[in-house]
Amino acid sequence: MKTVMKRILLTALAIGSIGSSLSAQQPTTASPQTELVAQYCATCHSERGKAGQLSLAGWTPQRATGMRDTTEKMIKKLRAGMMP
Image (cartoon, rainbow, N blue to C red; front, side, top):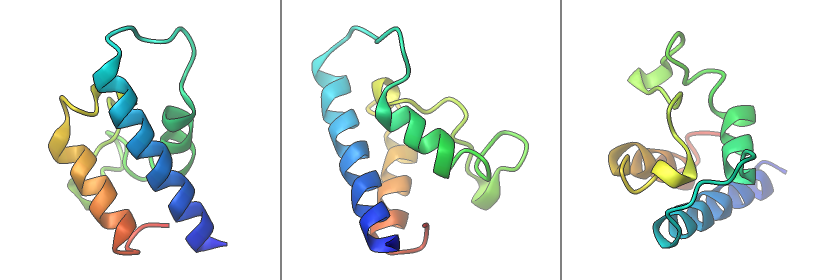
């Protein structure tokens, strides 16, 4: 189950990153990628918690290319199995 969730999150992040670079328009509702990050990541990686010295408070798929360092950290940690 943990592996399936990792794959879903990695796929969502990748799709969100690609989609955000193709479209300059921001959706009026939260994207599925934003919801996944909010549900599974932002609880610990908030401005207040900042687990691992990382805050995902401002991260969205639309900002993924502008926040490359943060996005790459997320993907690397997920691929390595260091995050759920």
